[in-house]
Image 1 (cartoon, rainbow, N blue to C red):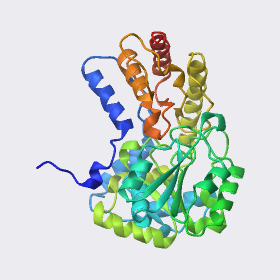
Image 2: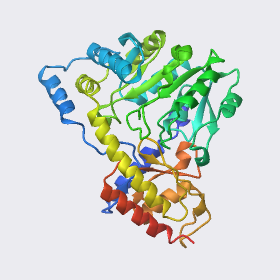
Image 3: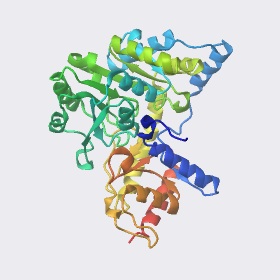
Image 4: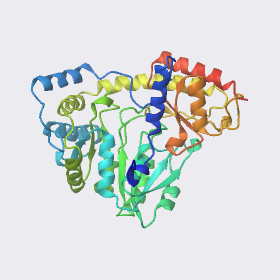
Length: 397
């Protein structure tokens, strides 16, 4: 009998990865597909990081690594948090995992009980609500829109809190919108959290280094709630190391110990070679993330300009990350004679099949009137993609 567990059956497939796979399938059939669906830098891992990995291999770092991570990496992360964020976290408060997604999963499984409520602002990263589901919690979604640059209001937050609220998940800079909460906005949110001593906050800061408007503001900067804030970060986005699979959490010591206990029974320590490479990345002078940031800002400016010229795309100006999240409900109800666009899923498939451009529908992020572009692609690919899309949507009447 082929029957998976109820736990797995309740989970949705990642639509980001699903769209990426569909684009790969079309490519395999010989089509020239431009894939703007996956959120990973198209830059290469810097040579000094690769050299650190090669040295680790030569130095025989081929044995099991400690569950929370090598001491030198934990110390590097501790120093980074002090140097870049003015935060004091001891190495014992940091847990290194197989990517930031595992760090996030660890926290949810360690803190969320059955039917606990987790507040998730939408648009949200595709995995948040699914991982809450895995932890047997319930997502309480706060909807935002492009007029407010996709940021929640204090009124919305206060209205979402109930006696069952266990956690708030914040992502700034945001995937999928690129929005960034200002210092004053974070202060206001922290004041609400102060009043509710049983609420934890996951602060997903994986896009920290891709910020076009100034210094990164960590939610852990507020002393009054520091012990209830868990930072999630890693090297994937800032150092073009998505495939190396190194993420980390920084939290109160008792939470870190819980994560070590859980990780010890699931995956144990992360790759020894990848950890040594990540130590080199985190200890570096920050020039590589700055170089990438300049490249992404240039592409952001191009995409905002190009999409604003296509009728039907309502676009704001993202402040970070490498995504644009335009509102596209103008196209709902329109047809090319073969396909009628009823929602963002239909629109994404129309663009994939007609323009051979892969995007992710907003429904994946809890925002069905939108669509996500990742502009982590070459200038030539972005120009070609926008031209193809402009031509394709002219067919919709």
